[in-house]
Amino acid sequence: MKTRIEHDLLGDLPVPADAWYGIQTQRALDNFSITGVPISHFPQFVSALAMVKSAAARANRDLGSLAPHKADAIIAACDDIIAGKLHDQFVVDLIQGGAGTSTNMNANEVIANLALEKLGHQKGEYQYLHPNDDVNRSQSTNDAYPTAVCLAIQFACEPLEQAIIQLKGQLEAKGREFADIVKMGRTQLQDAVPMTLGQEFEAFAVNLGEDIDRLHEASRLLCEVNLGGTAIGTGINTHPRYQALAVRYLAEISGRPIVSATNLVEATSDMGAFVLFSGILKRFAVKLGKMCNDLRLLSSGPRTGLAEILLPPMQPGSSIMPGKVNPVIPEAVNQTAYQVIASDLAVTLAAEAGQLQLNAMEPMIVYNILNSMKMLGSACTMLDSRCIRGIKANEEQCARHVDNSIGIITALVPHIGYSNSTRIATQALTTGSTVRELVLAEGLLDEAELDRLLSPRAMLAPVAVAS
Image (cartoon, rainbow, N blue to C red; front, side):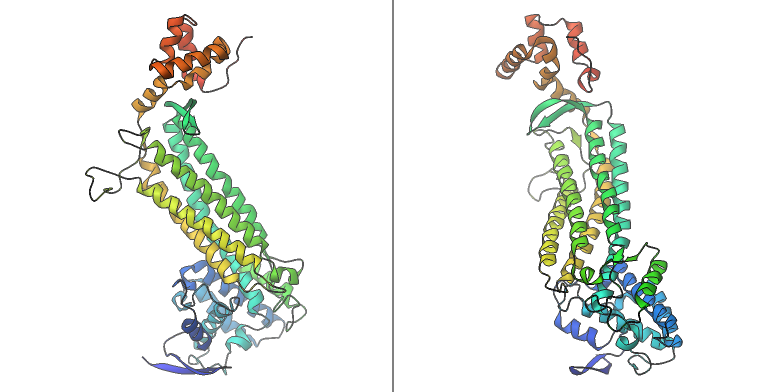
């Protein structure tokens, strides 16, 4: 493999001749091989890094801190990366030592070499445009990196929200489709009172849909950035007007309402917004997992379980049991939920591990939040297209459960009293007779009145009862 030699404070190192990155990225490749997940796995993060570098170059150009021809070349290179060019050159593992320095330098070096090409120079000819002196001018990893992370999470939120909206819409459609199918509701895995299968699916939709608003709210906190604070928030090595100008440019480039944090020293070390956002991802994962537990229970059987719904068969379920089909899609979503819940704990621990003016564990936070978002979006899409759309109701089984349940006695309590109802329920449980049969046999209600009280309209919504 052809190489070129680059130099840094540790000495010389060969870099692949055709690589757009440079020596510090190469050192990170040699040092960090943790997850096998490079920056390029999250294209929103790559684009966000380029937006930060572009905003910095524009501000430095306007203030006379960076020669116009260099600034223009950097901006053009950033535009290419934002458009999707050279994302494969962002190769550093997401989890790394150095508080994100390797990620920042990966961006600086790729942008520098792309800008050099635009100026008619070769890769690595940094005497004409340097990754640190020019691309990283007026910046530190400690403000450029977290600012890019804030943007990346906002960008990654859009496909996640769309996936949730699609899933919510499909659950609502099933709610309408199943609106007239009466079934038993259950609490603590025991018969409770009747409901419709439509009500059950409508509740799923509402439950998941609530977190769309929560994600929006948390995203707004990520619009406050510490860009311009450089090393610890004091703004060392920047022009007095740089910080406000760079933030303004970043808002224009990103299309987001980016503003400067009130206190840049505080913002440089604080991970609170990331903890909150991760917590919302965990909350959604918990809800999603609980719903999938319900789908698995409702479809259990098909002969000896609840079997009130039929999940679409996706693949044979056993290498030894012929005809067995498992609920593989909900099972996969459950496992996604467990991973997201675990990732939230990792984020929490990493945020708590900060010391003094910086949190060196931020790469762990970045990896886990972006990975959780990607997994949740994929899980929602899979659940929507491979499961929810194909669910069918087992109407006969739903009706059979209602008819055989003693839970319907609850609807009769206002009319025959709690004591009579308890006695009838106990008899039904011990004799195997139905509630209807026993009430009629004792003459507690006539058939017409019993039919009215046990009708879906009477059992599924509030009904006035005369005293």
